[in-house]
Length: 399
Image: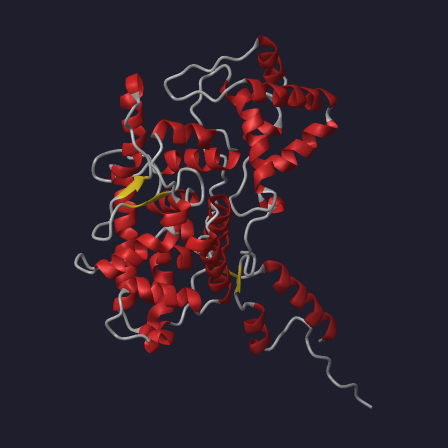
């Protein structure tokens, strides 16, 4: 009896070959919020490595005691460091602590920032170094998916601040966080520290498009109701001091707190104007992220009025004496900052364009806007070699 012909194991049907070559997104599903383990070199991880090394550990503890005795100078002052602190700093020069970073949404953020500013003293010795932002500048690639058709319950002529507020209400997480700070910052229950803490929680945990949409919604110049809604987003009656302090005193308080100091340095890093045209030292999106990061700290900025988009700190330079110029420079880094002004204007233009398009195409338009920045583009679609190879081996063994 003739044996049936055995199929050639090297020949696969065209359909199976096509299935093997189906492209898979590289890194798909790998865009959760950064955690300590996902940072390139978080200060908490670097501190653990240092603890294993007796010399590094001893130097860190010595430097930690030094930071409490060495006051943070203003930009016009020189850092005075005792000799024994300089010696401790030298022992950390080759440690991974010297390049460690934090993330504004990571767990144990305050502990991470404490470590960063402890070793900052070691960074500053030798070659003079201006304060550098402690935050790793990561970019969220996940596009904002939304359904603007849910806004049809509003009047067609409703202002955009109201529409963004409604989008937050329709999102469970945004709505929950907004109600939390709204309750903490209400007039009858206002306790400023609690209000600021809940404000920080909102802008850190709510999705960036929702939070920035409410904060930076565009209004018509004559629409004071819209402007008032935008200005009241941060609950200024509770979040801001009842009497404006001196701006330098406000900065002194900020620099004494690791979190506020970090946010201020982050703002100075990313919102530094290179020219009067509004060119930022980095991208506008990074400046806005740094600006929003200040909300809920001692240096909380806000819109000045209901009729324009001017920004200012809630402080004054009266009584600054010989430091008048330094005080005005600090105040103008918010009120007359062309980089910040252009970043805000660009975001408001985008928000206006968002609502001027067909609602059915709203998700695509957001993704298209984000993808114009190469840093925000998702990874290209490429054939995934490992799944293809594994599938090929299995098919050949069964064929």
